[in-house]
Length: 196
Image (cartoon, rainbow, N blue to C red):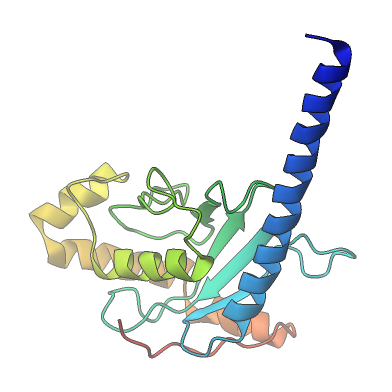
């Protein structure tokens, strides 16, 4: 292959990468704006470091109060989201920053959810993903756990499992933490009363 042909192919590859990155960035801005103006969502979305001189659209924080009926209501949770420059062709990396006791979320916050793991589709939006996380809170999957001890307890005694969930909320996800954020001047997030 001639060097001109190789250079031409490399130039096309570089141009395609820039095009995908710019489209991903544009889509992230649209989704960010849409989520922040959707009053039906139970989530507040912000940049990971909103005080940075140039906030990074590829790094978000999601703050939320789980809906009633999930078993996690009364807690305030934070999720970290990292997008690659290939988004939406590549799924975002997500993890709970707030400790949570769940069959499908491990002690490091990694989420076992097909939507963001092995069944990602570029047509998915972050609203779709967040809705799947809420559904996961409503319906644990102890038959496909990432947290095996939680799944074992869930199968043995849902009452003891829920006691452990409440203990984690009290210790790691209590609303006092949220109230302190508001006192520091971070804008309040409406407590969610939505149902799915």
